[in-house]
Image 1 (tube, rainbow, N blue to C red):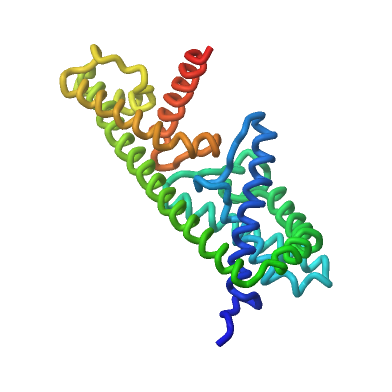
Image 2 (cartoon, rainbow, N blue to C red):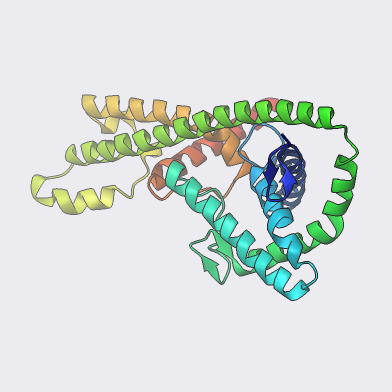
Length: 284
């Protein structure tokens, strides 16, 4: 019985392509983002140097777009649409599962919900062209020289690493999302508690609405009663935990936002900036 075939590729070779292009995608995006931000930005969610979105993306290119290579215009249009749909789907999935938006193209014209935009979609078509016409033939030539047994060993090793890395990352993402959600709830209760301590009942609804725009970071203990101070302490504990848990993601996705827990995430970002400033001063 022969090896299972995945869209015309032996499954062991398809997995090896996925691994190689996940690493190459990580390198490309890290170089691009590091250049833009003028600091080292190791992109991707995983601890290791891999961006699976590129690994899956190139497999899509190799399996689906190769038959169109003799029709450049159709190839470009198909690649642009399919790869843009893939990026949109990944962005949508991450937002729905973690309640956090890790990239946002809303500042660009012709964007769709901030998950994709026109110029990035067009670049997906260009990247697909470069990969299939120039990069993949050389990569495939090199990988095909590897003995079959070595391919199986490499696949097994990197698959084990990837599964372990993904498990640790999913756990960290879940904890971060949970902390931000709890922090948002405690923050809302703290705002209401602070308001009730200083507002008349007849003005409660109007003034409470205004107080929800106040920053809780600067709320002093002496402004609160005993219950309020306990809430503030709980809020601070959650913020410290969320800042530590989300630090890796925030350093890699500086523009990350949250729709559900927006205020909590903004407070965590401010806390992170303060902590970074203190660490820099301590080094100097």
